[in-house]
Length: 226
Image (cartoon, rainbow, N blue to C red; front, side, top):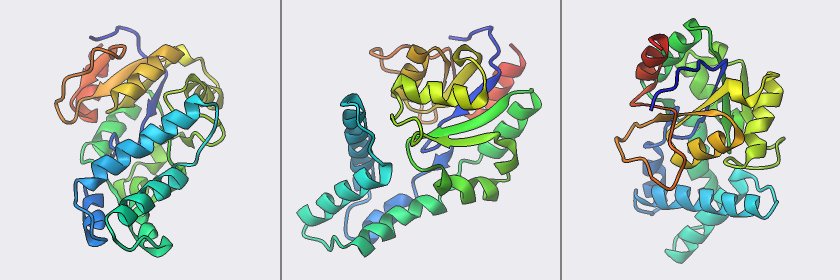
């Protein structure tokens, strides 16, 4: 579905939406876990973060991620020391952006859109990635949910981004690969733009996106022609 309304601000999710997390598999394998453990770990980290947010608590992404990785290693009979856990999680600071990020964000900025990021993790972790991709200067703000005190998809997280940007939520659109993020943004009053990087069906349980595109370059061209 395509909307005719042009937003003022694009709020970009980071993990998987802008960053390629596939290299983290090698770090799981290096400590003795199978590569597919990355998917289990990431899903479980989101699960626990969402659960604590629903209980009106705020957990740090790294705290939950460390606890879960410790459990996975211990249950597999592997070394679960802080050093081992850090060797895996430090990989977040060395991820690369998807190839479409630089040309896509450049084009979106040329269209006059303000660009900000909003992540459930720590915003500092992505600074090297954005600098390496040459897009750091395109981002007006790089936000995380710590000050909001609630993880996405809680409405407070999206409204926090609107407050920082000094605009109304209905003048913003969230860009993400995660349907739960799109749904949360839409319920908070934003538009939702779905990046269907893996060509997966969008779940019917969530509010549908206002627009869907396979990558950021395609999203920019769609908005340019709207």
